[in-house]
Image 1 (cartoon, rainbow, N blue to C red):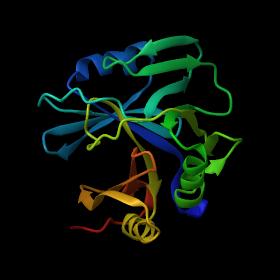
Image 2: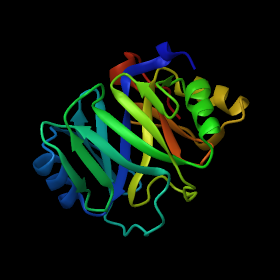
Image 3: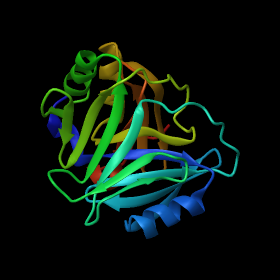
Amino acid sequence: MPTNQFAKPAFDVGFATNDIDGYTAFWSDTVGLPYDHMAKLGGGFHQHRWTLGDSIIKVNHTRTALSDVPPGGYAGLAIAHADAASLQTPDGVPVTLAPAGNSDLTLYAKTHNLDAFMQFYTKALGLSPDGMDTLTLGRSRLIAQPGTPARVDGWRERGLRYMTVQIFDCDGMTSALERAGVEIGMAPKTVGQVRYSFIRDPDGNWIELSERASLTGKPVPTG
């Protein structure tokens, strides 16, 4: 995927929780990120959003009890911060605070096959390689770690569940990746002014392809 197809120079990350009060205290008070807004996703989920440079920390909250399924491959975050600390979200996801370097947001992902992981994220998704195990999109970094992640059927399970890339053509990119043999986790759909789909990497991790009208400057398809 050409890098000029990205609608912003960063990726986002998505959580799901029953404890929005705990997450609000964590991201707003403990970490000190500015709150952006809340969006209704349907299905009883509200998405609360915090900004970190060009990235968004998305927390999908529902009052319906979420099951305690095993964590997927996304193993934790590092956040650019004036202070240094090792923290955990209310659902136990590791978050490291560290002085800003070349990135605002670092996402750690487990993989059982580093070569396949790097091939997928560079050739299929279009991130830029930066060493043997690191990929970048603007000031976001994705770092591979050895492991065999659990394959989780949904992206709305408790904890850190997906990453998001903002693109200009959700339908076109989803179709192109499907033709290339990439697993489609969810076909494109529209909610409000966002058209989005999900694909899965070789380890089964969920990746949202998001076409957001406020970033692309054009209306999203309906249906």
